[in-house]
Length: 306
Image (cartoon, rainbow, N blue to C red):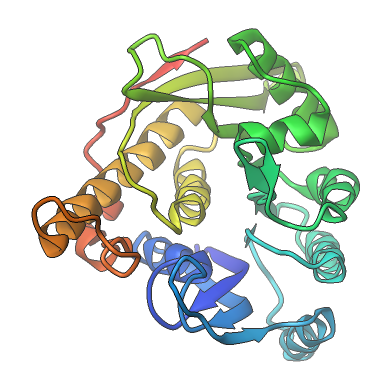
């Protein structure tokens, strides 16, 4: 069976963020990917210069209308990431609701990109839209710690807090929640980052159980752009192949990330030369070069059941 994804994200001419970060790995894994580019920039905004255009809510609607008129608006998955406009986000929700009516089995994977390390980098008006409109229609949610905290109004300082926050997010809508990064101390030491996941599974008798996992991810000392977009895309893919096994899906997702990042930092350091800091251009994800790892990742991170 063909599996088709509608991905509504940023596009860059050069480099890998948004749709550029998501489409290739999904295609490599056998998914048909239809991309709507919420922006079209020359490159990501971490460079010294960037130019480009932003898609309005009206223009998004026009593109969707075209798909609909040709009766090719059947999707198995929707994937969304960074957005900084409330009307655009509300239009996305309208489209998702319509597509879910057409296909009740559709799975919406949402990365609620709002901020990190205690600060928002999108307008604050987006928070109520995510909270009241987007999260309730999401099936899989991939917030970082800060995003999970502002969505639920709870602080995370312990593993128990994180579990409670994931349960609160389940109550808001999504059956699968992955906290992609937290400030929790890893049992394996400071060289590791803690991520957590929770998945509600309906048993044949109708009882709902939840699988909760924890991952210790090796830290890399560099700032990458597009990794969150890759994470959400890979979680979509690997939960598709392991629908009732969040442990396996997250191990594969995080292992792909590890291989891509390792290859990228090795290349960036080589290009920059000894003792020099790599540039944003040198730190672009080595996506094409990681094709084999994307298709069949060697597992380097094991998840523990909580």
